[in-house]
Length: 389
Ligand SMILES: *Cc1c(COP(=O)(O)O)cnc(C)c1O
Image (tube, rainbow, N blue to C red; front, side, top):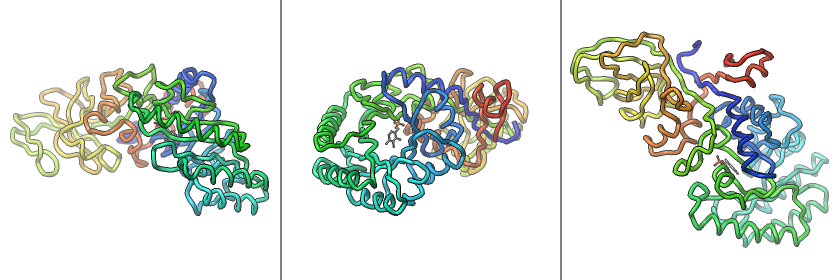
């Protein structure tokens, strides 16, 4: 290992997950959601792995993410920026063939103006607020958005490529909001179609809805967390998804200390007897939550050990008791779980959060090391398990 801590990303797992989701989605196309650095997995490599697995669209949250994908050579595939924000460089997005989302007539007008200046129509997905009360036009504002879109289409500045919405409670399949939102989406779609819009794709489903709501797949599905092998509904199951990320570190130092030694800032952990401590060089500056002090487990020397004392910015300590471990030996913080290490879901459960946050917060200081056959192919090599920081 060249770096004291690294995030190994199995690109074959991403391709596997997309293939699995594609099958679950029946005939719907798959837009792999690669926002936020592909949930921490690395934007362009994860995007290419998803395309290898059968995704035919990519989705991001921010304009800069879409432009980076294009700059890093991801071409010939539609990319959608899912959040519409005023003041973005829409001309550049149009020039780079990036689809944009508009959830208001005001934003649509801004996009149309950029298209007029660019001399080329913008591809727009109209966003309906079907009950999440976040982005998008609600039923009261929907007719005005549809009318504005029809006028812009007539003018040649906008092509309505899609109509979309987003579910608030898909991770609770029994929640009544799912049916309610689905019904509103159907009504708003019907209105748009009656008015004369002919979107290429209608889309609603995130990972949870792909796996639990076959009636909500429409033409296109938008898996995020499941792309990376983490289940959106841990209470239901893992669905054969393969977690792609393993967070690993090498012990920096192993030493014996006497009974009664206070460990790390604030001495929130004290050794009960003479014991062996190991220092692990990953901290909250790398995305190990400080909230996980004295709480999170890692795999070291073949056993689960709890973090002893506070997580520091750059390191934390584990108590090995009388077990032996050399400096430089591998510690697995989380991963698929097949070697006995915790999963990102285990960390999320301990922290009272969701696996999304665990993987997404792994910071830029941690090199991503791509593994698997796809990683080797990307480097033009014959076998997997290579490195690319
Ligand atoms: C992030 C996002 C998704 C993916 O959600 P998951 O729960 O991670 O599958 C889908 N659609 C939109 C609009 C998103 O922003």
